[in-house]
Length: 453
Image (cartoon, rainbow, N blue to C red; front, side):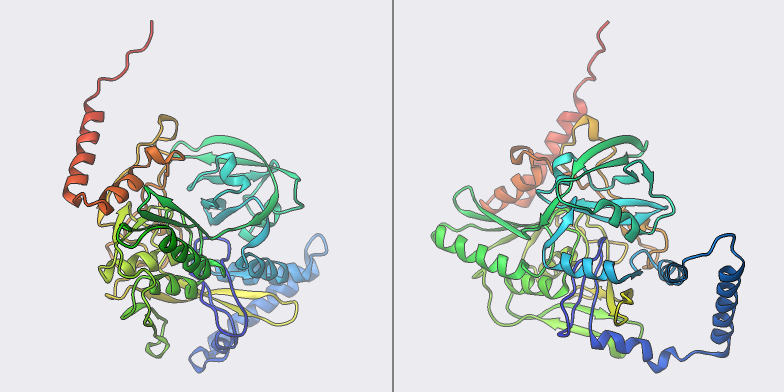
């Protein structure tokens, strides 16, 4: 999730993460708790010695700025999968992306084992239209291997001028099946909120990520639904957060606040007790108490988990789908001034109103419903989740892996959406689950097709 202060708006950084930005964040650097010891100065002296040796004796004259930047990034990436260094261009790109408009392919990514891993393709972008899937590993961009590149360098290669081609070499599923896709770059203008009337008496609202437009988009969608659907016929809301990788903290808080008007929404806790912050709801339930169903899956991360966890803890919504990603940490964006870029540093964990930590565990839905996955995608439709990322923040012995992240393109085959509609139309949870189990049993009992002679 991304947190921001009044100084400057921050946004989604590449990957399923959160961050903070501003004067408050910069104060972290000079905190007394971080006073350097004698050993620290010794190690810094060692770094200086190595830097001087490389600069003086390397076989070719190195780029000194790149040496320092790579050293900084190496230090940060060794901490956890979500801390990194943003050079001036990367910092600018991140702020642009927060605004919901940027150039590229439309993929949220992180890094795993030296490869670029797709968290989720963004709705209605070149990536989603080409069939890029959550969990895909990008091994090469325009036939150049990404092994050895930083995440920011790999992302830069996927960006470029609008209408220019790019080739992705992807490894998919347990067997790492090789898939080559040719895409055309486009201006990615993310419409964070999409809404429609469902079955004439339900408001379906899809949030693809949490950017600066999300809260306003949600308010507009809810107002329009209340105009279109008579109050006496209005059955409730379906809030679809599946494959939503997260985004701005303040936007996720406002989304929760649209459905509740009292109580805690989320808390963030840093290394020291005095860094704890609690965010509470303000009066004004925009949903007017109508029932809410939230859809989540293995691609729902960070700010999505904040919303799902808060509404679940307040018993304000029924969660349907599969376990979420498990991204339960907050990254602070710390500007370094001038053209020096910024640090993206993990500074806190977040907790649901009941005190649950989502880190490496995720949110378990109230109703677990699996989708029917096409044969060609079976075994390739799951995300491993936060717990599978090397160097992730640990969370006790009860860590959990990811889950199914497949959403059928045809809503008539979308079992999770169908269950949400049935629930709002009055069918009981037990009845819906019983029918789902019957379907599963029926599929299992079908005889295997015989091969033709």
